Amino acid sequence: MDEITIDQAVAAYIKEKHNIQGFLNQVKDYFLLDPDLNNEEFPIIHSLKFRLKDPEHLREKLKRKLSEGRTITKDNIFNEVTDLAGVRILHLYMDQFLYIHNKLLEKIYLEDWSLVEPPKAYTWDPEVEELFKKYNLECTRKESFYTSVHYLIRPNNRNRTIVCELQVRTLFEEIWGEIDHNINYPNPTGSVACSEQLRVLARLVSTGTRLAESIYNSHKEYTTMSPKK
Image (cartoon, rainbow, N blue to C red; front, side):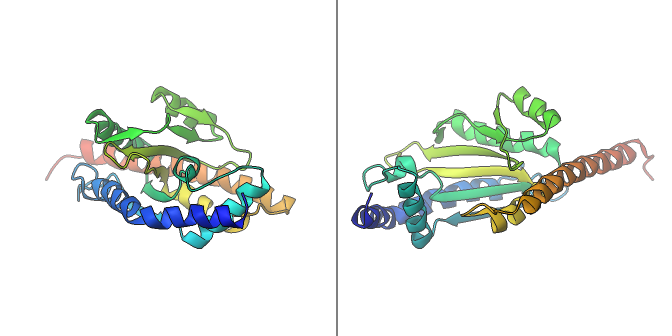
C-alpha cells in the first residue's frame, strides 16, 4: 500500500462521507430521541458522543496499517476500516446497560440494521464478564484493562457497505478511556509506570461504578419503602 493507494482509499471515503454521515445521524438520533431511554424522571442514557473519522487521521491510520503489512485500498476500505463512523453511549449504572442493549437488538430484529459481527465486550473484571455472558456477549480481555462493549452495525439498504461502530460504557469507564486515549493513541506509551497506573485507575473506575450502582439501589429502595405523604 503506497502513497497513491492511500490517497485513493481516502478519496473513496470522502466520496462516500455524506452517506456515512446520514447513517451516523440515524444511529445517533435513534438513541438520543427514544423516549424509553431518555425519560426525564429516570434517563437510561447519560450522554452521547459521535464523530466521523477525519480524513487526515484516516490517512495516518492507513500508514500504520501499511507498516503492519496490511493492504487497504479504495475497494476494501469499508470492510477493513470499521470505525469511520462512531457513536458512544454513556450511562451511569450497570443495570442500565441491558436497556440500551435490548434497544439495539430491537432495531436488528426489525431488520432496520444488521450486525456485521457478534458484539464484543471488553472487560478485565470477572464479575462484569459473567454479567455480559448472561447477555450472550463475547468477552475479551485487553492487557490495557480497556473496558467497553462494541457493536458493528450497518443499514439494511443499498448502502450496506457503510459500518458504524457503537460503543457502550459507563461514565466512569469513559473517564479512564479518555485518559488512556491521550496517552496510548496512536502510539502506546513506553512508560511502565504509566501502564501500571492506568491499570490501577481501571480498578478504581470499576469500584466507582459499583459504588454508584449501590447508591442508586439504596435510593430506589428507600423511595419505594418510604411512606408517601
